[in-house]
Amino acid sequence: KQEVTQIPAALSVPEGENLVLNCSFTDSAIYNLQWFRQDPGKGLTSLLLIQSSQREQTSGRLNASLDKSSGRSTLYIAASQPGDSATYLCAVRSMKTSYDKVIFGPGTSLSVIP
Amino acid sequence: DTEVTQTPKHLVMGMTNKKSLKCEQHMGHRAMYWYKQKAKKPPELMFVYSYEKLSINESVPSRFSPECPNSSLLNLHLHALQPEDSALYLCASSQDSGSTDTQYFGPGTRLTVL
Image 1 (cartoon, rainbow over the protein chains, first blue to last red):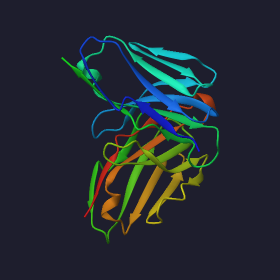
Image 2 (image 1 turned 90 degrees about the horizontal axis):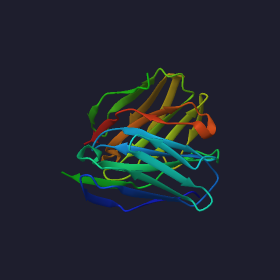
Image 3 (image 1 turned 45 degrees about the horizontal axis):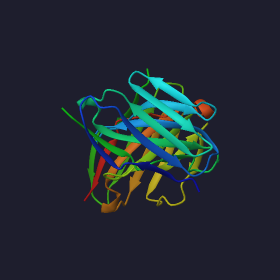
Image 4 (image 1 turned 180 degrees about the vertical axis):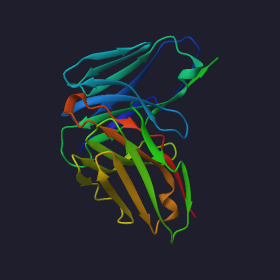
């Protein structure tokens, strides 16, 4: 059964710092991995999607990498801003056809201090 | 238009009530999802409609009943809920296109069961 973990669970950094969030998964049979942002009490906003055949994707100050063989992905945020404060979740889309084909990690709660 | 809409935004119901949550997307997506999210936890997949075929998470109680009237609409019918069912219910949609499949989420319905 696919399991997704994220470290750290929480992170507090001063504004301007570069930071890395980590995501690990146990089954490499995935279609893709997606990073989301969630503000408190709100829905999820898609940040980046990496296909299983890709190594990384970039959008603005965000860069996500994927190492499928080792079951790891990282989300790099450059020059962090207070507006980046949110919970960041990774999700893998499994190749299995059962109901659990999208599995979320528990999230990293990020706080950027002005 | 990459919007998924959900109604209502908030719902308070008693344990004997029957209510429905609604979700709509106009992106031509062929897969729609219901997730349940408890506070400080990741979303948990409840149901998936893919090309109008239902996949069920067998751990979801029968007091939750999904309905997909057409490819743009998704309902979640609620009956005889328990206080522990109080949560944020999120709807999402995607093309169900394998490796490029990106999920788009609605803002959620905050459900409180008294």
